[in-house]
Length: 326
Image (cartoon, rainbow, N blue to C red; front, side, top):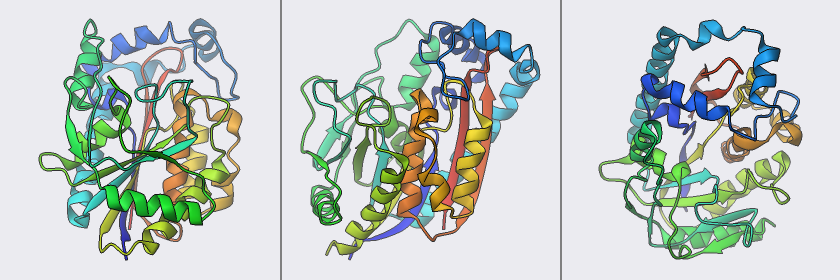
């Protein structure tokens, strides 16, 4: 049977790809972001958030603080890369979210698995931004990058999920002119190059109403993925990875700690009852982490790192997190 031998979670923010000297550019872009949610799930303007913060983020916005946080994140990413190598998986299943790279609202599955034997990344075209140029390279989206899939295992997982009463979308290709996005390109680039093993992208609709899976459904999905892997007759070592999160584009440390403490303490009920009104915009990617927590249920956390990065007076930024399960 196939076996999940390693589980991990990683943020994939462009702040992990572009150096701190460019973060102010991203902070300026935040001023025009219409999806800035406060810690109660209410959309607020940048200026409103900044007024409410009343200067409390000043110490977190110095270049010295940014450089320190950058180094902590890069150290954690390096450590995850070593864990991937030590686990020696035959295939990696990445649970990420599509952000209109493949799907549109004309066809928006709640969840889908790719069974293509070969896939490519899409292109990130905003070349007027130095910040996004750096991000595009680390996302493997500055040019088309081709990576291998594993069609037979993907089919086994899809059949197994159906047996576990999880209705799953099925893909053997991508719409013309599209490619996989940063949720997949970043971990391939950071953990698997130069010779990546096959990757199975699993798409979870975290962002877009009305068919976002609930936290409880995500945890059930993770359990079902583990069962489906065990039911496969293939003799394969599988690594599973949550890509994205934690809270952004407004950092919410209380929410993040709730999630990470529940993962550490194997507290499934807390993960299953995270209020959906808090899982908006980038914070919605916490669903990917809940899914992998379900797949790794009962396993200990080997280590974790949490680095909340604030890049503006409004508290915008991204809470970086990295977890490695035994």
